[in-house]
Image (cartoon, rainbow, N blue to C red; front, side, top):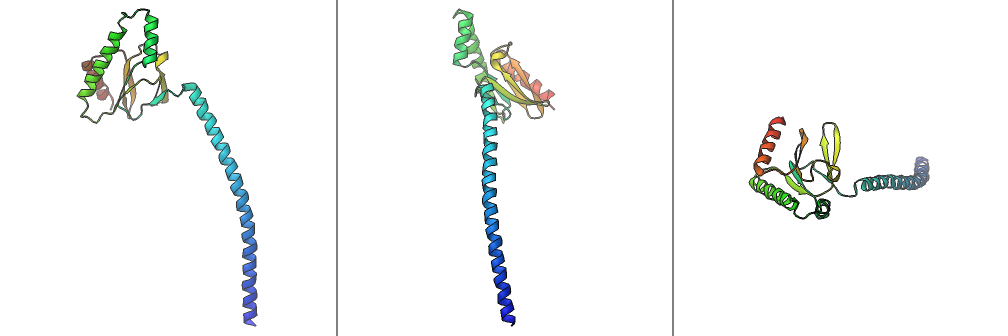
Length: 182
């Protein structure tokens, strides 16, 4: 009699688990379908947000967060446009460009053995972090000068300097920035 009760109990348990397992299988199938739909919706939303950002910044943006010193200057097309605006190849723009490259390279050679992370860029949009949030500098909409330097440190707001400077001027500005950035 005990064997019959035990066999009946085990059989009931197996049938119950089998039935419950089929219900769980159907539930899992439906959940998987719902999750897939939600993920696709999420991806579409993220893609549309990225597309909007790409339209706004035309894929020409650089984040300078990981660099201490950033040199920015016009790219070739922008330089050609500046020459056309000047209407004269003897306007001094070639000399400005040459001086900028010379002094930037002297400075970079001098600090090559330090831990400072540097970059020379021609990207149009420069993304940087401040205490008040993320900001963007559009080099082409900058009325000051197409050439410049950004000093950047994670504990301070970046300092943007426009124009062409000698390597000595750059060292002085860097020392001043580091002194005030504490």
